[in-house]
Length: 91
Image 1 (cartoon, one colour):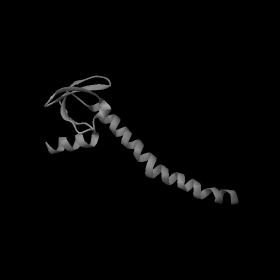
Image 2 (cartoon, rainbow, N blue to C red):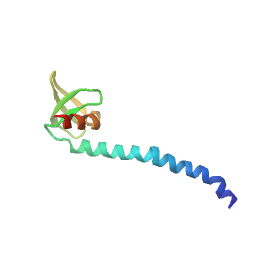
Image 3 (tube, one colour):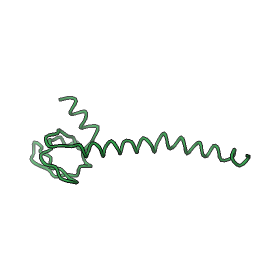
């Protein structure tokens, strides 16, 4: 019983770290993967680096984004979930 009481604070710290740090990160990654999979031609997007555009073509791991300067090929993971959702709500 004494050994369990010694490890209880450490176990409690692991539980707190899991629910405050690890689990929210996993949920965010899951939402980003779902967002990337749901992209379609014509969607307005903003990349993580701030480039605004509209999806012109879709490929398995990349997209062609049409911007005011022309077309750019980029990875799907470069598209920001949060910024793209804000842009689509504003328009």
